[in-house]
Length: 377
Length: 206
Image (tube, one colour):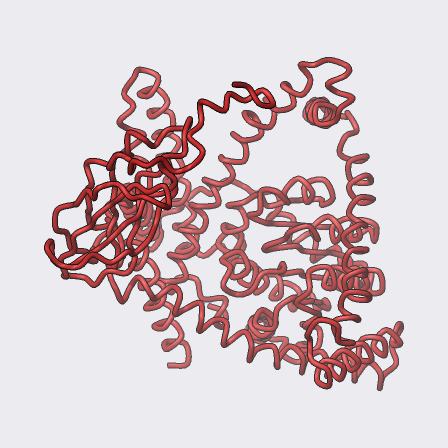
């Protein structure tokens, strides 16, 4: 019979007088790569668990610490599901699991698992490829640092944005205008902000040498404190401690667009000769960079946020793309140890490119196991 | 010693964070959460530093009266109003604090965000001038993606959305992934320099 185009005879709408068929192959195993306390229960769904009827509406999962003991209901899984994670186990205790199919009125006969206990693991086996890659890259970086320590001259490719830092500071000095340094809107737990504060130290030293005013509006209190210490030290090391003014490294607000408004206002009032944007930026990137552009300042940006890079490339004179932000400190300092780490980083990239090309060729030839080897859990 | 203690703390904290990524066993599995909690506590106390700085800078501005000093009055008044209203009535729904948040703070934030539309237009105007082969390629790609994403594109030619999707899924994605790989390596290198104490500008220069 058709009702509204649906064959209602194909549906068993209400509970039948018979209980549903039991699920089969109930297996319980310790959840791998965890801190313990979890067991995964799987089963093959009941023969009555099909799209066309409602004979099975859910699966009931029971647990007991003895096969002949009392089983306690610990959870349910929806129709069509074949897995349940019990996250309430005590490590070392043996458990038996029982699964029943149910139409919420009648339950199928139970299907029971073997005894199982949960445990914590000391190594995440799904992250072997990550461990190998980390060790390899760390080894390369340390090896090149060692080479640099021994005095070997290392060639580092020129980065236009970093070559322009001196010019930008010099231009601001010649124009008698301040330099503005914006360290992004993230806090100090973000590696980009740490990289930004490190670069700030280098820029502050040049600003101190040229006796140019440096403005650092901050979006986070901790960043402000770190920036104040970094700039102060840079001024001291440049022999210009008298020129250091803590009020120029100021906190504005934690609010994203409040910060953008505050920085825009400072740009329009102070008319800086050079503006640096280094760190983590989101939607405020273009608001800041376009306002900076309208002031006529030379602008250098650097971020590892791929979504914001096009905005900076469009609005700024130079942009440090991704890794160049992290290379900036070493590049500007010209210290052999730091340059050694850059060289190691480049070698790591060369190896990853080789693995990518090799992987594409192997997968194209049908050797798909490499995908599983390189996957991370 | 003033520099050695922070370096030791950095080294231990860095190594523990690396280990907890590979060791799911307790106590390592709980360390990231623990460190995040510590960081939040420090952040809350650091807010006092930020507020202190804000007051100091703007009080000085009121005393010295430089160009635009009246903006400091607006800032301090805004801060005082929100602080007092929040302390008296609390931040719950329906309170004056809640009213000011939804009817003053949020519209101003939205207004700043809305400015982005105009800045995108002005930036696009400069970026899309076909002066070089690269800029021309950018212009053509941008036009194809933009037209492909609006109904007009489908109306002109039903393959245009597919071309737009292809540009986003292949050349654009490949470029983004290349940048992401570089970023990951840069993070490893920077982290290693900091953990091993090679990079110590953030502490106090070389």
